[in-house]
Amino acid sequence: MKLNRQQQIGKARASVLDFIATQPHSLAYTLRWINQQFTARALPPDIAKNFKQAWQKPQCFKLSRATFYAWTRERKQRGHSEPLVRQKSVIVKPWHELALHLKRDNPRCKVAELHRDLSQQYPTVSYRQLAYFYKGMGKS
Image (cartoon, rainbow, N blue to C red):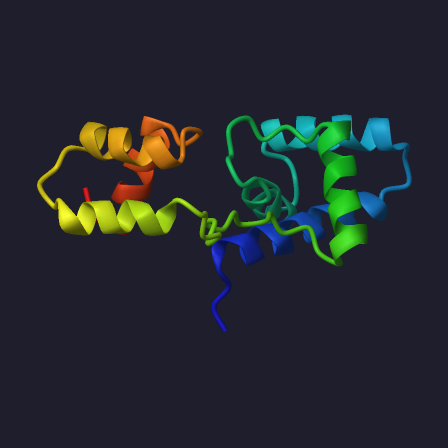
């Protein structure tokens, strides 16, 4: 079974957390040591590979105390330390139906004109919200 990106990251984080748990030294010493060893390319190959894959956005490859505790907290709360994937909102707002009808009735009309018509009934809807809505629906 092939793992998706979040599962790969979670597996790598679990490996790094397990490796840190086996170290006999204090957490501060272990974090400093693992960061130095990774920079010097002296970590065991499997740990180095997992250390490199453990970040969702690998920028500096430095495991801080805050990151360690965040990964540990996620693992404790959710049972894994995989990063969460944000899902697109599927909530239908009250103004969506009117926006669709306006676009259907005036397909060549510009968003600014549609926004003017929509804002008479829904004044809190911004131009940008309406433009993103049409873009997301493939209607702009």
